[in-house]
Image 1 (cartoon, protein in one colour):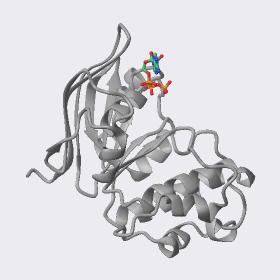
Image 2 (cartoon, helix red, strand yellow):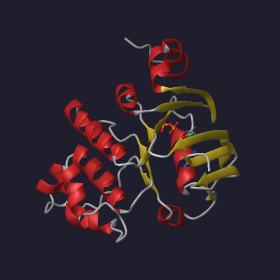
Image 3 (cartoon, rainbow, N blue to C red):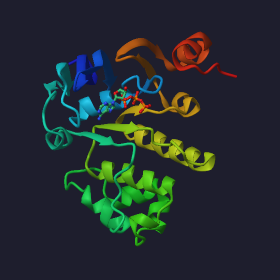
Image 4 (cartoon, rainbow, N blue to C red):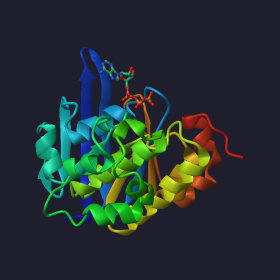
Length: 236
Ligand SMILES: Nc1ncnc2c1ncn2[C@@H]1O[C@H](COP(=O)(O)OP(=O)(O)OP(=O)(O)O)[C@@H](O)[C@H]1O
């Protein structure tokens, strides 16, 4: 194998007649953190869902650790080690923090409660609180923590810091660095470019359902043109 944990090849997806993904190709290496960037409506969330099985691809291939997973149901894909943390977090509000975490637990996971509490001390403090009592940032930490309990080899995050206060964003960035350092590959969709360049090894830019640019982090940071052209954000 190539050292890639994920290989997406010419992925297509439709919503009814609308052809949203038009041949997306990308890879994620072992323990690599890769971002998928692009303007609103480019197809980023759909790509993540197509990989994780929440949207059924209409063409192309998704290979995960060498096996073709395109079109499998989401739970089968999750069992293989692909965990999607969706944009709206999916925390159960009537369960406690600890009950939420235990829902994700797999016995063979290297990530048990204590490991989660070490990375997210706030969750330990709040472990007996209901999910509904958490701040947005704490809910995000809980959603990531629960995904880890499920033994992901690839963690897929859709806008994990959207709408969060800068101090919480910093906390989550530090936590994602720890998770990455533990060897978990991460595929990240995030509008906050500061966050992306702090974390990523590599970036892809998606436009109207196709990848139009790929760059390592250093090259991406230096290339103001690309940010302006595809993302509409000139960098300071
Ligand atoms: N369930 C759906 N049914 C129909 N169309 C959809 C659905 N979900 C998304 N779309 C459309 O598909 C296109 C791609 O959406 P997607 O959410 O993948 O984009 P995105 O790049 O993640 O954008 P955003 O940052 O706005 O979430 C958009 O035009 C969107 O309106």
